[in-house]
Length: 466
Ligand code: BES
Ligand code: ZN
Image 1 (spheres, rainbow, N blue to C red):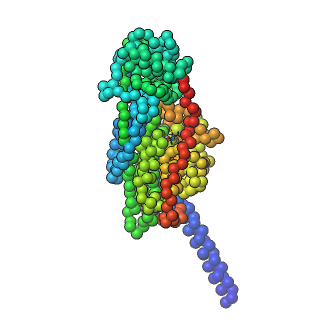
Image 2 (image 1 turned 120 degrees about the vertical axis):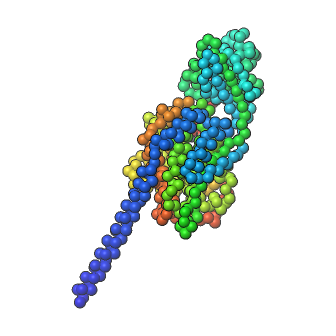
Image 3 (image 1 turned 90 degrees about the vertical axis):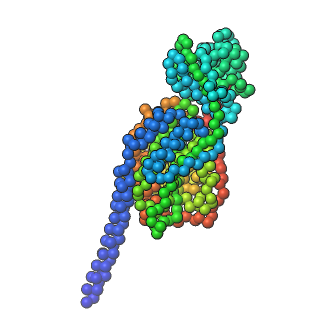
C-alpha cells in the first residue's frame, strides 16, 4: 500500500518533469520552425532587382529631388503589389541639386555635387547653361584663358582656395565652374557671394571632361518637398491583437554622386521584402513599413514621421527595426552591428537571440551605442529602436566608399545581405507573430515628449578651404 503510494508520487513527478521538458523543447523547436518559415521565403534575387532599379535605373536620389520622388513611387507600387495600401507622406525640405550632362561629342551623365549650401547655391533657368569646357589648370592667376568667357571653367583642386578659383573664373566671364578633386573621393565646396553656379566632382569624373570640344549642359534647381512612403497591416484576428505596433524602416534617399546601392537601396529592398513576406503571416501586432525620405540631410523624414504620431500611437510602438547599409562587400565590414541609443532593448535582444538560433551569433554585435540613422528619430520619440548595419568588428568603420560614387552594386555582398535579412526577419517575427514569446507589456501611460539629440556624423573631417 505504502509502496504503491510512493511509486505513484514518483510516477507523477516523472510525468510532470518530462512534460515540462517536452513543452520547453517543443517551444525551442517551434521558435526555430517559425524562423525557418520566414527566412526560407527571403529572395535575394528579388532584393537585388530592387537595388538595381533604385541604384542604376534611377541612380542618385538626393533629398527632395525628382529622382527621390521616382524612388518613392517605385516603393509605393511595390507595397501595392504585395497587397498594401501605400500612403505617401509629404513634408517640406528645401534642397538644391545640380545636373551636369556632357552633350558633345557624346551624351553622358556627369555626377557632381552642387557648390554652396542647400539654400544658397546659385541656380539656373530650366534650360540650364550650355558651354564648352575650358581647362583652367589649378585655377591660378594666369590659368584662365580668354575663351573661358561664355563657357564653363574646369579647374583642379589642390593649389588654390575655392574662393580664389571661383572669383577668377567669374571675373574671366565663365558661366559656371567645375572643381575636380585630386583623388577618387567627392567633396563639398562653398564660397561666399556666389552668383555663377559651381559644383565639385571626383578625379575620374573630371577626367571624362578633358579633351577637345567637350560641351556640357549645367542645370541647378531648387526643390521643396520630400516624402515618406508607408504601408500598414493590422492583425487579422481581433481577438488576437496585442494593440502593439512594430515599425520597420529604411531610408531610400542618397547623397549627391552616390548611387546609394548599399546606402541605402539595400535597406529599402530589405524593407520591401519584409513587407512581402509578412503580408500573409499570422500576426498579433500591427506592422508598419516606413520608407524614409531625406535621411541623409539630417533624419528629416523619420523625424517628421515620429512628429506626426499621436502620443497614444507613439506609446503603442514597441519596436523599430531600421535597416541601413545591410549588404556591403567592404573588406573589413564583417560584423553586423545593432546600433541603439538606449542600451539593450527589444530590438537588440530579439536580434541577438535570433542570430544565436540561426548560427550567426558570432557575427553580431548587439547592442552598440550609435545613432545617425532613422532609428535615432524613434529613440527621440521614446521608442525602442535599433539599426542593422555591417561594420568593422574592431574599429566600427563603415565601407571605405561610404557616401562616394563607388557605392554601387559591384560592391555589394549577397551573402551579407542574406544574413542581415535572416536576422531581422527572424527577430521581428518572434515579436509580431501570434503567441509571441518575446514580450513584456509596454507601459502606454507614460509617453514622454519627443526630445531631439545631436548628430554625431560619421565623417567628421573638416572641409578644407582648398
Ligand atoms: N548609412 C549612413 C551611416 C550610418 C548608418 C551611420 C547607421 C550610423 C548608423 C547614414 O545614412 C548617414 O550617412 N548618416 C549621417 C547622419 C545623418 C544624421 C545626417 C552620417 O552619419 O553622417
Ligand atoms: Zn544610410
